[in-house]
Image (tube, rainbow, N blue to C red; front, side, top):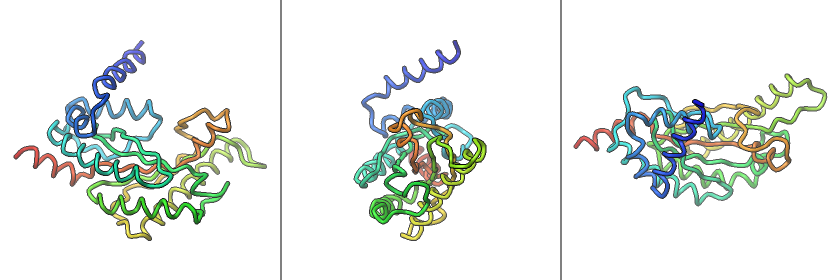
Length: 232
C-alpha cells in the first residue's frame, strides 16, 4: 500500500509538472519537498542519485534560476551526436541533465578503449561541459547482466562492474584531455549490471543497459549564487 501511495504521489507531481520547462520545474521542486521527490524519482528511474546534499532545502526562487541554467545545458547537449538527453532530479531536488551514450557506440565488445567514431561525439560534448562550468559532473558506467566465458556468476558480476568502471574512466580521461577541468568531474563510477533501464532478457534491452551516463547538476557554488540572486 505504501508503494502505491508513493507512486501515486510521483504520478500526481508528474501531471502537475507536465508541460513545464526546467525553469518552471525548478521553481516548483526547489522547496522543502524537493529532496524527497528527487530520491523517489531517482529510485523509480533506476538511476543512482547525483549531487552532494547541501542540507537546507533550496528555495523556489533559486530553483527557478538553476532550472534556467539547466535548460541551457540541456539544449546544448541535445545537439551532440549520439547523445540521449533527459531532465532528471538531483539529490537536492533540483533539475539536472542526464546524457546517455550507448556503449556500443563508444566501445567495441568487451573493451574499454574508445572507438575512433565515438571521439567526435565526446569532443562536441566537451564543449557543453566547458560552457557550463557551474555544473558539476558525474560519470557512470553500466553493462547488461550477461556472464563471461569460463567465469562463475560472481566472477561475471565483478568483471561487468570492472568493465563499466573502466569505460566510465575512459570517457572521463578523454574529456579531460579535451580541456574539461578535472575539478568539474566530481565522480566516476562503474555499477556493472546494477540499475538496468531495460529488460535484460531481450537483446534490445541488453543493448540499452550497456551505457555510459553523464550527469550535469548544480554545484554548491551554483546553488549559493542562485540563492543570493533570488534573495535580491
